[in-house]
Image (cartoon, rainbow, N blue to C red):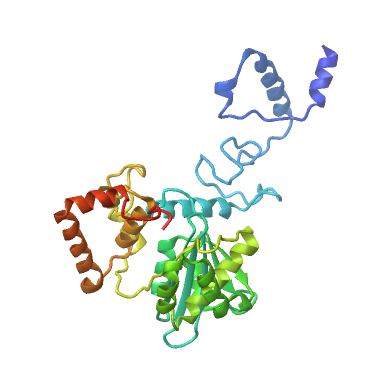
Length: 348
């Protein structure tokens, strides 16, 4: 018995978890708790807010108890609490905007200094093999640029080193850092923004049928094309991913002739997601989504978040196509079967 007592005293003292003792206490562990209580009554007690005694604390920095400031109990090697907070906010924003699963989206930004600055943006979705480039004529507050970035919910945003600390940060960099804090911001050398290399990426990676229309649409859009080059270089360097020739869906999507809907309004109006149950289809998108392919679902989502405003360019042609499909039942059924497409709809 004396030997067992000495062996017990040589063991490191552990404080029993207050939340788990009522569930996992057994007859064998009761003696251990009695010895621990006897020793803890003699030794000075540590504060109850200590991480070692706080059973509701987990390694991600989240807690199940009310938030209590503990400046003296943070461990030197622990991860900052902002990491877990960023992850949760990003996941919430993605679900609000209708993303069913996490996606890796790299966004490269370039800007021209001036009274009405032009901003080039390129979004490359590594998970889906898609790229969207835009050039925006914005104002000093960069409302259109920030709104477009928020709707795309990128996982990483790339700036030139000249626009980031330790250099004097640009206005756009500071605004994105404040308004989109959940997204990781990285920097690359200015040489990565090359219009020549951006055109080469379009020529080599875009679908063959899309190359000529893309070159016409992006003619004179220096900042958009150079941003595409920077995003592709970042993906190659940091993810070691090289796309197969003519396998990347590249689209030029101008910001003109579209409505701007704030993210808070998207959430409050339940446009993409039900507020009470995120898995419920009781939302505007859930009621309208009768698409047959993932590409059709993404197109519907894009048109709901940024509705077009030009009837002659968008709305009237769609009504004409709908009228043709409803009056020609045979054509409608054949299109549903996919017989009019040489390739699969999703691969195009």
